[in-house]
Every structure is written in C-alpha cells, then in structure tokens.
Amino acid sequence: MIVRLILLFAPALLLSGTAWPDVGARLSVDVAPAIVQVRPLAQGRKLIRLPTLEFRFTIQATCALDTEVQSVSISIADTRKTISGDDILSAFDQPVVFSVPARQVSPVAVDGFCPQADDRERQAELLVRDAVTAHLSLRCTGENGADITYSSRALDVILQCPDRRDDQGEPASELAR
Figure 1: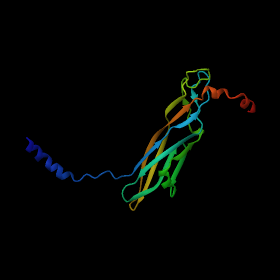
Figure 2: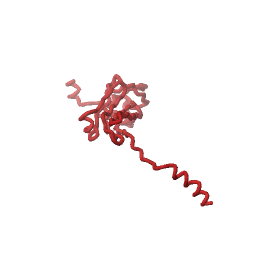
Figure 3: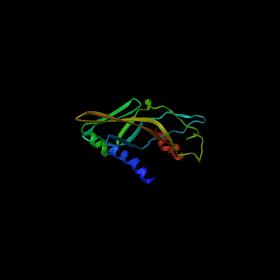
Figure 4: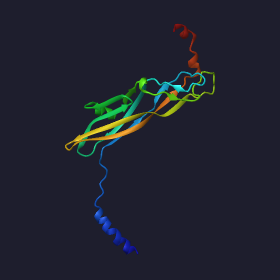
C-alpha cells in the first residue's frame, strides 16, 4: 500500500517543479483613528457632523525584484495625496499626515452619546468603526514597465465628549468671550 502511494506521488512531485516565493509588490498601512471633540448633543439628536479629520498613515511598501517604488497615492473621499521623488523615502520613516475636509465627510449616527443633560455616568469616548475609507496605490517601475498595487482600508474615528467641568468653564473666561 505504501509503495503504491509513493509510486503515485513521485511523478507528481517531479512534474510540479520548484515553488517560488511570492515576490510581488506589497503595500500595507497602519492608521490610528482620528480623534474628534464633540459638543454635548440635544436630547434625541443622533447625527453628528464631523469636523476636518486628520489621520496619520504609517506606510510599508516593497516592490518586486528589479523594480523600485515610484509613488504611493492615498485617496479619501475627494482628497488625494501622492508621495513621490525624494519624499517617498521619508514617507516610510515617519507617519504621513492626511487631512479630510469636513464637507467631504458624512455625518455619523449616534444614540445617547454625549447628551446635554447632566449625566454623571455619560460615556467619555465612542469608537466609530469604518467612518471613511482610504484607497491606496503603490506604483513600482523597472525595466519591464510599471506595476500598480492597490489597497483599501476602512478608517475609524474616536468621538470624545468633554468632561463636565470643561463644559462649565471659568467665569472669567466666559466674560472675556
């Protein structure tokens, strides 16, 4: 029985050839959630218009053998940023800051977060998952032409409700306003 199995698998092993490791381009990013301060909401209100969102991208990109990175592009809503030339090396060493204007971000629906009513047990932070989506592309060039690798990433937003003491303010600062 064992001899038959060996005779059956031996030709398959000989015909399969050598397995090559995946040497294609790779693009990965790590993005911390954007943090947004929220004013207390009126009772029953559930939509929050977000201000300009600021994300910090940590980019890791490698190209296939015999090619090099030409550019990395980031796109969120109608905002785009392309990193190329001398800036590409610093983009891999330090976070890339990317801002999305408020007018390009949809309102987010929340229920019972940061009410105006005096609620001592109110939640201080709320994580909104997948608030916006980032589309990225890595362009690699070499002797045989260009190759583009695409990636998408859902980005989170953290809503912060100010501490009740922050809402009250100091009397002197209220008069100065």
